[in-house]
Amino acid sequence: MNRIGTLESAWRYPVKSMRGEAVEDVFVAYTGVMGDRLYAISSSAAPAEFPWHTNREQEEFILYSARYRNRQSTLKPRALEAAFKEALNPPYPTADAFALEVTTPTGETLDVEDPAFLAGLSDAASGELRLHFTQKNAVDCRPLSLFSLQTLAQLRQETAMDIDKRRFRANFYVDWSNADGFYENELVNRRLQIGDRLEIMVRELDPRCKSITIDPDTAETQPRILKHIARKHDGFAGVYAAVLTEGMVKPGDEICLLD
Image (cartoon, rainbow, N blue to C red; front, side, top):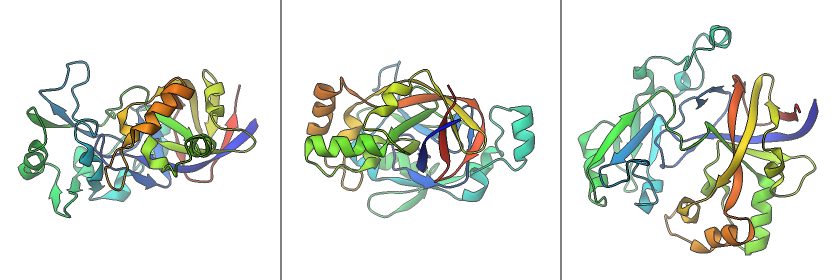
């Protein structure tokens, strides 16, 4: 196997479009990182093909943070070897294990199912909001997204801006060993192994939207970032991947090119 880099960090986003969290020793199923985007909020004002209420409609949504009450039980299946053998989809604990609480930008902490949570969001929404839960990850496209530190460094240089990597909301931030920015673009339709077992196939480039213009700490927007990527990189930054073989990953894991 040809080693091409390391996993700098792994992230998940318990509620779609909210602030994410870095995780260590996490299970990656065919549906994606365990605990990633299991909750989402729909809006009656959104189009049928994309019914979600996101930080694109309400920038401060990115300032909400979510935490699983029983965090350890949401990182890997209890019977890990059995999960590998049976390839269940998904091989997770019961839904009760994913009990979640949300902290608002004002510091108030609420159960995600508390009506006060949606009521607070509704003040800035144009449609009726509803909470959804799934154990199969409510992702937009493929189950995994990947973004490199080299691409981040190139964008910082090109824009003369100190861009926070969290703007790109990737599941995997990677550090290539001997490659420049946007090297991940060359990996489309190629297989990678991360750690001892996880195998993925990079499937397509990641088309960027307003979400990357939103500062993850202040919710202030900077349209110049998106305009630059649209002009210089055809609107793409990072890649999407599919999972071929499930596995555990942690920061520092080697990334190898299989073919």
